[in-house]
Structure formats: structure tokens, C-alpha cells
Image (cartoon, rainbow, N blue to C red; front, top):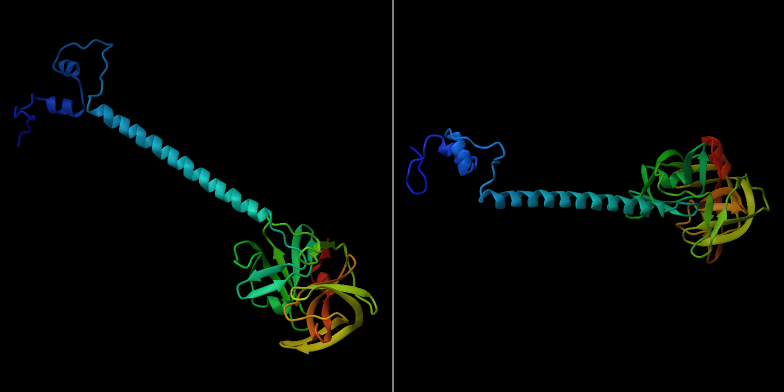
Length: 278
């Protein structure tokens, strides 16, 4: 079928192609053999001008939307980094994993690698650890667990956006205690501990090299203090001044009627992994 113009007339040969590309009347004259001056310019038809304007507007809008999305993504990443930079994990704080919640005893280091000491019984079966109960701020992974026989585990910190001070939290509003040394306790020594349930309490060392048998197996080489403890205190740090001495692993009695607490010596953990407190 031969194409026609809107008025029903057949176009001249070549006219359809020229119109399709939007050439002006002067351009059609040149195509038909007439001379077109050098300075003549092929201009868009009136119908094309709004189309080009729309195209330009769409391109500009796309660029603006792209810039806005990129800026929003960068801002979100910055906010997330800022939130993590405000997080810190120290002795006495709680770390969370799927199905587990363990108290940090002390932070320690091996060269530039940082670790947390927690109860081995508490950390069994857990892999990734978080600073929050919602499991959104990952801080490290389990590096080793020793239980029974001894009762400690190492968590290797991997998130460099989080701070890991070499200190112990004494509880809400009670400040912190800087830990600079570690030592094995001796009978009669003053000692304090921080439990998640009972908080900051102090007493004296009653016995060393104690063996106990509790759910899961026998643990050797513990020490015992006159301080009471309650369920939930496990893993809490025990210290004498600025010296780390152990973590809570068990208790007898309670804080209402009186009791005592058993601890895993911190020096055994430090020696096993080649670590030092800081």
C-alpha cells in the first residue's frame, strides 16, 4: 500500500524519508537539487522541540534521582558507622549470639588482635557475637572453648568500628575500673566482682585450687571467695584493684541467706592463648 499525506496526496519520491527525519523546506529544496547556502542549518520541526525538552527534563530528573539515591546511601552508611563507633565492649558488658548471652570477663590482646574472655560453658555452640540483643552490631567470633576441665572461651573481636577498652564496667552509674595486670589469687586477698544480676560486690579469697562438679562436667583449679552470686552472674569479672584475677563460673547459696562464689583464674586463659590484659 502506497503511503499518503494527511490530505490524501501521495508524497513526492523521497519526501517521506525527509519528513521522517524532520528536515525543513529549505532542506527539501536542497535534496531536490536546489542549492542550500553553507550557513543554512537543519533545524528541528516545531513538533520535535517539545519532545526534546521533555527528553532533557527526563534526563535531568534521572540524574537528580540518581544523585539523591547515592547521597542517601552514603548518609545511611555514615550513620551506621557512626552508631558502631559509639559502641564499646568492656569487662562486665554482655555479648549476644543466637541462643546465647554471655558476660565479658576481660579484654585482652595478642599483638594487634583483641579478644574477650567469657565462660566456656556459656559460649558452647555459639559462633558469631553481637554487642546488642537485636543482633545487629556484630563484634566477633568464637576463637576457642575450653570446658570441662577448665571453664573459659575466647571471642576474637573483628569489628574495628567498635571500641574495646581494657577496663571493667562497675555497673550503671558506678564508673569503670582500669585493668592493667593479671595475677593468680592468694588466700586472704581482697577481691571484687561484677555480676549481671547482683552487680558490684567485694569480699576476700577463701580458697584456691578448688575442684567442683556441675552440669556438664568437672572443673579444676578454681578459687573461691566470700562474695555471694546469683544465676545470671556467670562470666562476670573478678579483680583486685587494677589486677584481673578471674571470672565467675559457679556459686553456692545466694545473696539473701549468704553464699560463696567460684572463679576460673584468668591467668590460665591468658597463658593458653598467649594473651595479655591492657
